Length: 287
Image (cartoon, rainbow, N blue to C red; front, side):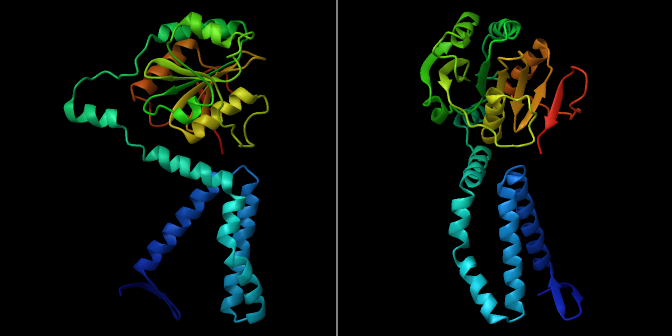
C-alpha cells in the first residue's frame, strides 16, 4: 500500500484520504438537506453520541461501551423513524436527478425536431396572470418540462385542457370549487387542478410567505419543476425553482423565465440579490 504521509505511529494512505473526503462530503450534504429544520439538532446529537461511543470503545471502557453499543445497535432503525420526512425528500431528489426522459433520448437520437414539445400560447397565461395580480386572486401553477407528475396530479381533479386565459381565470376564481390548490401544466396542457403540493419546511423563508408560496417552494425542492404562486392577500408573484425563488418580476420577465425553463435554456445560476433590494429580478437562496 502506498502511504501519503505518517503522523507519529499513524500511517495515512491515499485511500484513507479519499475515504475521509467522501465521508466529509456525505456529512455536509446531509447537513444541507436537513438544515433549517428540527432534524439538524437530532442529527448532531446522534453524531455526537456516536463519536463518544468510538472514543469510549478505543479507551476500552467496556461497561460504558456496552451501554452505548446498545443504542448504536438500533441506531439505523431509530434514524429511519426519526428522519422519515428527510429520507423521503432525499430519495425524491435522487429520483429527480436520475430521471430518464425517453422523449429527450428519442429526439437526441433522431434529431427529429429542434423546438421543445412543451410549447403553448404563453401569452394566454400572461394575460391571465395580469388579471389575477390586479384582482389579488390567489393562484398556484406548476410547470413540468419532462415529468408527468402523476402522483401529484392524482391528488386533484383531472382536466387535460388547453391553456387559455378564460379557463385559468375560471379555475382560480374565488367561488370556483377548483381554486383551492395547484394546477399542473405538462406538454402545454392543464393536466389537473386542485392538486395538493408538498409544503416547504424551511424555517428561513420570509414571514410574509403564505401557504401558496410555501407550497411553491416545497414543490420546487422535491421535483424538477418551475412553480408560480400569486398571493391572495397582496397579489405578490414569485417563481420557485430548485428551492430558490424570484420575486418582484415584471410579467415580461415571468414570460421569459417560463420559456427558458420549457426550452431548457435556463441560466446555470440565478444571481443572488438581498431581500431589501428594489423591485428587480431577485433570487433569494434558501439556506
